[in-house]
Structure formats: C-alpha cells, structure tokens
Image 1 (cartoon, rainbow, N blue to C red):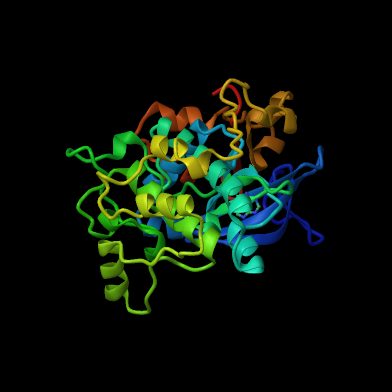
Image 2 (image 1 turned 135 degrees about the vertical axis):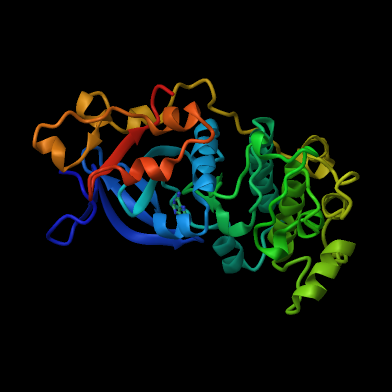
Length: 350
Ligand code: ADE
C-alpha cells in the first residue's frame, strides 16, 4: 500500500521518504524527500486541498501543473511527478540544495557586481525562456529564486503563473498577486498588465536587492509604498558602476511601455560582461526519467489499498488529463479516489 505517513516514524509518499520541512508557502509546505530505490533527493510541495479549494484556487493548481510541465530549463526548478491523496496534492520537484538567494544576500549584506551579475544573467535566462513559452511567473522575489550547490540559480514556485489562455479580452492579465515590494506598478493598479513586462520589473527589484542589500521601494505604510512604486521613486546607489545604475533605472521604469524588455537587458553592456548563456534542455526527452525508475508497469498505476486486493488500477497521467480539458475538475477526480489512496502520476511520455 502506498500512503503518506508510514509506521515507525518514517513518513512515506509512494516511493519517497519524506524528511524535514524546507519551506512554507501560501498553500502548504515544501518537504525534503528521498527516493527509496535511487537515493535521489527531491523537494515535495504539499498543497492542502481544503485550503486550495476553499479559496477556489483549484484552477490555479491545475494551471501550475500544466505550466511546470512546459518548463525544462537548467535555471528553472523541474517538476518530476504529481500525486494526490484525499486531502493533499503533492508535487515532486527537483531538489535545490543551496538555499534561497534571499539567504545568500542576507548573509553577505549584498553581492559584488561580478557575483550578482552571474546570478542575474541566469535569472534573466530563466525568465526569458519562460516568457518565450508564454509563461509568466508573477511572483518573482529572492525567496523563490533558489541557488544550487554550484551557486547556480533555479527559479521556483510557479504557483501564481498564468498561461496565455488566462489573459482577458483586452489581451492583458488581470489578477493581482505577489509581495508588494516586488510588484510592478501596473499590477498594483490592477488595470490589466503584460506578464512579461511586470516580471522584468520584479527582476529589476531583485537586481537592486542583490547589488545594494536593500529594497528600492519600501515603507511601513502600504499606501506610501504604492505611491513610491507608482512614481518609480527610488534612489539608485551612486557607488554602483554607471552601467549597473543605467540598467536598474531602465528596468525600474514605472511605465511598462518604455521599460526595458528581456532582449534589451541581454543587449545591455552591464549584462553582457562574462556572459555564458544557460542552454535550455527542451530537446532532452526528460532527464527526470533517468532519475526515477518508472520502467516497471506498476509505477504508472494508481497506487491504493485496492491494488493489494487485486482491483485493476486506473492508468492515468495527470498532465495528459489536465491537457485534455481546460474545464476539467481535478479536485473532483481526486475526490472519487479511495480514502488514503495516492494517485501517482508521472511526467514521462507527455
Ligand atoms: N524550497 C522550496 N522549494 C525547494 C526546492 N525545490 N528545493 C529545495 N528547497 C526548496
């Protein structure tokens, strides 16, 4: 039987042993996990279905899963598997073991332009790759920019991202979300916005934080903070190189139309120094296949108590399922499963 919370203190999720909590987000925890057969480390994002559903956010979860499926880039956290119990949705993610960029900055106060540039180049590579796929992050901040053991950036948490089919009739996105300090003025105004341009604003705020160790826009009073953001009212440190100052000014332009875009950033002198582009792994079939041995037929089925009683398990792939219909009610599907069952789905062959 596959279930979460095996006996003798070992908490199991399918073939994964769950460990310590790595972080806590809006909808639940992220836990360390180890694949019992390969010993490979993963991060499992555990979404509380009741919280997700009570907030009427199940559409958002479906979107996140569909979105992550599209993203295969060395600087973007990979989704390997999705599973669900009656009360939870589990997303098995690539484990990134260097912590948050936020902690790195907090530890050092700020980073040198050379060190900061390397991280920023990878961030822009990741973000522009996603934009090229029609995917916008919408919650970019140092907390969801992770760093691996080699010091390379991995952008995580696409929970608030939106695909092109979620744009309104005016061709713009319409949901306000994210931490105010990193949110673009046009998003705060909630009059519809271009996801790519607002992500670039957030990248500008992140670059400012990386290079200065402080926020470009901050105030204890939310209304004052919003005013500062609307006006682009910030002091760019004079002690930064002229090129760095210029780039920051162009990215933190409150007018999204004149704000520098990803192509402009990549052509900027400050960005171009020591630049080695991160190559996306689109063509590699799915490197996750190498990590998890899904060759046996049993690994693709619905694992539940009835499996052991000889009931024929449903064979399903969540991504195919989600892809089949945009109006599909994923929560209803999970609800019909036997209590304490897990739907183990895989990312392969999608
Ligand atoms: N915290 C949140 N997501 C994580 C991940 N994928 N790896 C490590 N820590 C995380």
